[in-house]
Length: 262
Image (tube, rainbow, N blue to C red; front, side, top):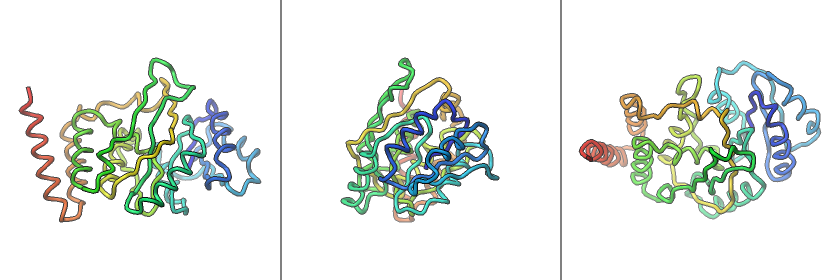
């Protein structure tokens, strides 16, 4: 699922993605407002390709979260992923994920390491590996570790999972956190790991780090600790009863230790 928004600058990257990925997966390319001609240009070139569907302007709430959720609701394949218009993968990302999830039926998602794409601004470029803790069978370990990442100011540890290939029927909708969707991907990943473990692949995902990226307008989630804790506690209350008390106690202990730390 490739959501477009003022994507003309990234047209060559999206075009290359379509050329690379067609034949390996079904693709939905979408632009809910069509501020520019990106979707029209791609439709002109790829309209005859049975693997690619195009969805144009329609009535969807403002913001990237609503757009992503609209695409998730349209998907019908057993596995799904979102691919932002400025990021790059090749077919190995899809192929390795399919094989890994076939081999690990209890896993909910497959994700490899994130690297900086060649189109990144050098001073912003970083890489990130998926965290092994999210592969654990224990729901409590996964959730407590994810909450710790959020509450100590490392949401990127969860944000990388937004790039994963996920089993559609177990994929949660992205939570709405205002029109900007501040850290919606991280809170989505928190719910994801509460539903099941991930499996790590060797295929690489190339993220384009640039100063116009929405993420650089987001504030640290710790700047509003009360809101952060409310969102975390709301998810904990939705956990199966067998895990709920264990996770809640561990999070309270974690918070108490953080307050007592020098």
